[in-house]
Length: 553
Image 1 (cartoon, rainbow, N blue to C red):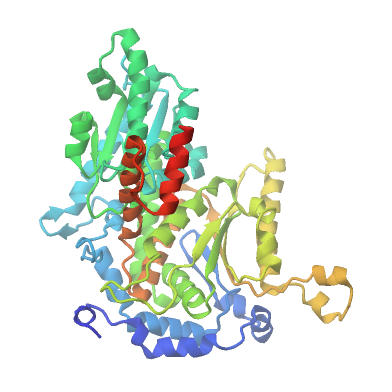
Image 2: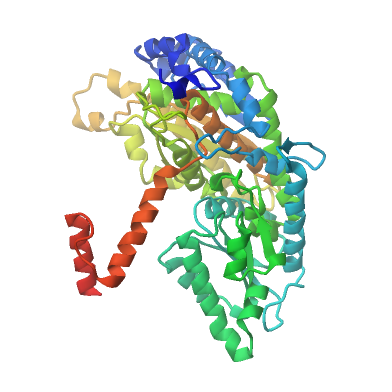
């Protein structure tokens, strides 16, 4: 063990006796069908609840011996201390020497958290008060564009966490919208999204939110520059100036006030982030302004309260009943020990259509690492490849692979129990909802148990062989009592903490993302070479592709 490893504040799970136990257990043959046949109480024993969330993980390839070893593994790497360090603002982001205090963004105003010289709670609620003021001005029509007309459309320009979080939540909670103001989202660098949206908007009544922690992300700033040009083209015909356009049509959200000011964002329209807020964990901050405009500040605060309730559960619940801990430990068991290196998220609710994309970034950008926090090369698998889709759509897309392919894939099924409360008025919709729930339960059942009857029938019929489902695909089912801002907040916080549990076991830093930086730097070099039509700067393939592009351009 080198000096950096010896300096670790926590014991490594890799050297725990429980790690060896899990390796031995993983070598056994695991059959979900056999586990259910051996234990009539299995479904009860491997399920738990926190608030409005109920989690059934009985269809995972685990038994009491595996669960006991996983819980022992959590204790051996001092998971309790790591959770406390996260929530209290310790330097858990080791490579960037900072805290990761996204949980502080949803602390109530009565809480107390001091990190160094910063009164974190006071700063957070000062920012939330500004979100409330600005969103109220837009919502009540007192925010006017350069021609004096009230705002009708808001466009959030961001990428990654500055886009996926508010996009996912705004889509999920749109039935709570209490305004006619439409909210749009733009992230794509090539301008396609922005161009398609601007065709349908009025420059005089459109407000842009530029969301960028660094305020230096080329994707976001290129879209913002195009939006400014679009506004100026109309403003000039109304004797509007660039200063009036910038003041009346742009809000900036960033940790870099200098860059916002240099770009032209008016000081009163700058919303603050902090370095301890990771982009993919930032939807609880001012980054959620678009959502606050759409559903109101009361709804936004309910989202924060739901997340905070999951924070408290994470901090206080016994690990054997702790949803994030169990979800994270099961993910480690699947990926590291059973070598199930693919995972899919399957929400059976159209309102959660962007949840798989959100969780793809949350998990793979956080835990897609191959070295420990101390730089040592890992000799075990970490984050699986994650993807997903609305369940009913996925059934007609990639379920064929899940049921009859050669790959093992772990699955999360997510559904909401109650919807369309006026059953007489919404009878057809209620029937569709129940059909969706039935499909959710049926698919997880078939993935777990297959159709052993075909296999045991002994038929030589080719048709029967084509119809064989092997089963034994592990899955967890998460049921929300119903989808509300509060329950959505709890669900997202559940997955945030799952990521942290996994990272704690693997001894990796889930809060940096150095893996995306080199590509950005190289893109700048390639862009300059493209503009100057220079050749011979890179490898032979890149140079050849540049020549081809330059010839066609």
